[in-house]
View 1 (tube, rainbow, N blue to C red):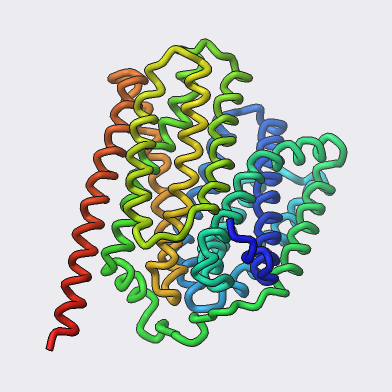
View 2 (spheres, one colour):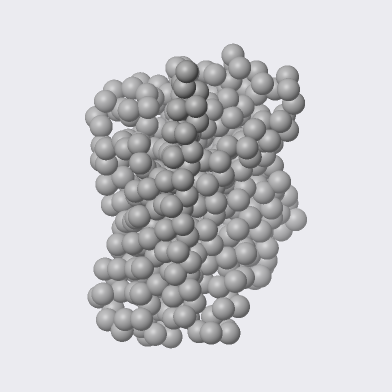
Length: 410
């Protein structure tokens, strides 16, 4: 990982503000879970309120992308953070007055989802405008590392705080942390603010999405990550609990160790991804790593050795994180900067929309053909598609060379 990126004051301000946001997201999630279970003791309602958070994201993400492209990412982030502060302050006041109800929790969950959807595209489209292309991969690795770190330490810190202070104070404290994040954001100066100059908005907001869909490389990248999402998310979230209980005979603690092992591999992969040199053939490298991952993902489920399962899960997490770093960097460098917001919104909209499909498909396949065959199918799909994408990448490169030859032919 290049040290120069940490000498970039504006990127560091953004990095720390993002880390505070990631922590607050984890804090809010735990507080919400605690309140729903306290009010209802219903896991069904808990799942419903999480769905209420997700649905607005799916709808609002394209709007968040268009706003990011029309205005500067800094403005969108500050407005989004401010909206979250208002939500948390309102929750704190309502809880202080003992007026918090399940209906109000559902409303605020939806509002939190809307604000997050506005923030998300700007969070990833701002990075290429704060650092040079040579430092972009390292910058993405740092952002991803802090994101992964928040999943580890966020719930633990939130649990400790909720055991010490009242819930209303907890909400006010979260608002205070986001206020500090806004202070950090206010010191950022975007080096390459293409949005302000390009203003392709005069041609219509929808045309930007049409331009994105005409870009073959961007479409290939989004298809690539979509297939990975379908093959990984469902088997991980639905299949691993079944595997831990039915095959490895592990209890809930054992399952948490399995998931933590995958998470540990993810953290290691983020660091390794940041250390890798930039390469013009990132897409080919990505596809090759994905093929290796697919083999491991489809094979580890067949072993009865608990230790081997832990090792292979750690390797899976490591490879997925490396793929993510290379993928985000390749997508950012392949996208015109005035369209970054819309591309990121399409990316996250796809991943958000595909998650429930992956859950459903995994559940159905486990019932029909069993857990091991389900994982094998997921792994095989990833391997085959990765090989196809490698071939398509070669065809696309030859096509571009052909265009360049025609362009300069006398």
